[in-house]
Structures are given as structure tokens and as C-alpha cells.
Image (cartoon, rainbow, N blue to C red; front, side):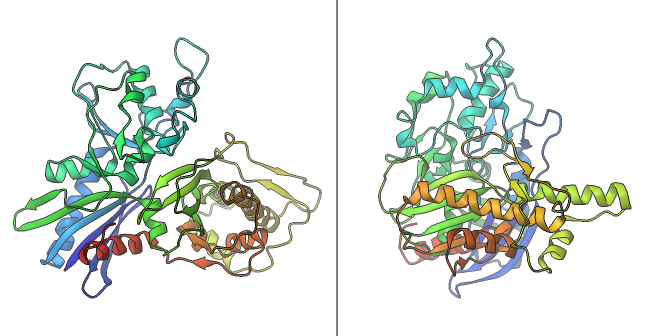
Length: 448
């Protein structure tokens, strides 16, 4: 009884073949995520949606050819973004969570699309959504898209999660999991329904949306020649990664990949100054997103690479630099140098990073990298207190995500700031562990 598991990430699409009877992954491959379209400016982050479908079909062919008894495929996908299919667009477009067009000023006013939406939807209005107005939301960038490009609101328009779009193309059925529906910004996570009232407020209530499920039922079957594979709902990558750690209510999880999320697992729906995302087994993920991630560190690494290229005519990959940095010790002392690692937007402000307190001898590579890691620790500790309160933390602390699992320096800086001796490091691709756990629950008759 074998299943294909696919993680559709921002940089790579990773696929595995899971043998549910043996409870082990027996094959694995990695593919580049479709390239970002470059026709527009830096605030736009779009991909050709059909390219994701073609890669998934290729994965199915390759893995089903390897194991003809493959029964199904399960997706974990990046969140917040959406796919739009509109007659005025030349092709179906995936608008990524990295898109920030909603920060642009509206044509007839000096405020941004984001500010306009914050005026229309208060935090109280969006409490049952679990998320609030922010640049990554599909809600915000869809509103900006329709306003900026004057798209017709009278023509047949479909909005999907990345996963439900792929499911529609594979099976003809449109279904998305609540863990991916919620981060779009207009779903009620207590009733698992779309907020049509919100869409009506901004003139988007005409759009066609997929059905929402919180289960892991079969959405349909993909058939190609002799291949016949059941297709299951798309699940959110963050929640599924957390599920793969076996963390429980009361535990704190730092998911640090390209970007970062700080997550506190709770068995109750308690709104606060954080997002609440639906989880599995009746629990919730209290989340603070837009936390520092690998891309924040890469700002420093790319500066080193630029020096290598411009001064020494040496082209280095990021991985090579990290390998060298990781082989050295003594990163704790920074000789007074301070780094603000907010080179990308943080939960409470836009990008405005800095290196401070420079004197005639402390501006060294060791100090800059060490101070960057130390600031990661300070930022994560600050927001951990918001998530769990100021009292003593009694749960376990987990690290997930490639950017922290591969970075011993970062792990040590966070551990020092939190004052804990040990943390639990998940497997490098814990999202596969989460998908495998969901599959096993289904095979055994449980609910994901």
C-alpha cells in the first residue's frame, strides 16, 4: 500500500514514495519549483500555475512507474497565496505568499490597498478567520490585482489554493483542506466555510471557490494510461511539518525555512495578538508569521558572495559559505556589535535591518554573523512571550525547517536566549513525517 507525498515549496518541490504497510519512505526526488515570472516589478511574485500541474503529473508517472501498486497522492503546499483563473488573463496565475503588490498606493488615493483593507476589516471582524490583514494574504493581493488591472467582476473567475488548483486539474473536482483555505484570509476556521460577507464588501463575492474539507477523504482519481491514483486534499505545509514532530498542546515550535513561523500548540481557540490556524486532532496552531528566516541570513551571505565575485572573481554558492562557517567555533562573542536582522518585513514593521555599534576593530565576519544569529534569538524570544505569556515555559521546544536544522550557530543562539539546555530537532524534511502520519491515520481508520 504505497502513497506519493509531495511538498510544493517555494524553492523546491520534493516528492517521496511512502510504504504505509512498512511505515517507511522508500524513494525520494527533488524538482525545482517553477521560476517566478519576471515581466513585472519586484513587488509581484507570480508563477505559471500550469507548470506546477505538469511537475505533479511527471511525479505521478515516475513514482507510479516505480511502484505500480501506488494507491494515492497527498500534497503539502506553501500557504497564503492563490491561483486565479480569469478570462482577461493570458494564463492561470499563482500569486505567491511572497507577493507584496497590496503595499502599493491606490491610484486615486495616497493610501495602500493594504491600508484600505485594514480600514474595512478590523481584527475583531477577522477573529474567526484566525488571520488578520497582512501583505501575504491572497485576500489582499487579489483585491490589489482587480483594482490595479481593472479586471472584470462579471466574468467567470475561479480562485483556488495552489493545491485545489492541482486537484481540479487532476480530477475535475475542486476541494481544498481547511489548513490551506484559512491562510487565504477569508475562511471561517470554526465553521470551515468561506466568508462570502467579506468578499462582498470588496466586490469579490462573484468568484468561484473550491469546497472546504477538514478530513482526508479522496477528492477524485487521476488517470493517465494504465495509471490510476487517488488524489487527497492539499494540506498546509506549516501545520503538516509541526504534525511530523509529534509536538503536543503546550509545546512551542520554531519553523524556520525561507521565512519563519513561531507556533504554540493549543487545544483551545483563544484569540490574541497572533494568528490561529486550524491544526489536526482538534487542536490549533497559534502562529506568529513573518519571522526571520533563511532569507534574512542570506542577505549577509549574499554580501559575502558579492565580495568574492567583485574582488576575487570567485563564484561561491551559499551552501559552500555555510559549510565553511559551520566548521568554525566560537560564535558567541560579538564584541559589542549589534545586528537588526529585519532585512525583510517582521510581524510589527516593514524591512529595516541594520548593523550597529561598529568601531574600528569589531566589524569582522565572525561578529556580523554571530550578531545576526543573536538577534534571531532575541526576536523569537520576544514573540514567544506574546504567544505563551510571560510565565514559565513548561512544554518542549522544537526546531523545524531547513534553515535552522542546518545551522548550528542559529540553534545555539536561540537556545541561549531561551535559557534552555535542550531542544528537539525534527528531521530535516519533517513535512514528510507529517504527511506519513496523516496517511497512517487514514489507513488505520483515524481522521487527519
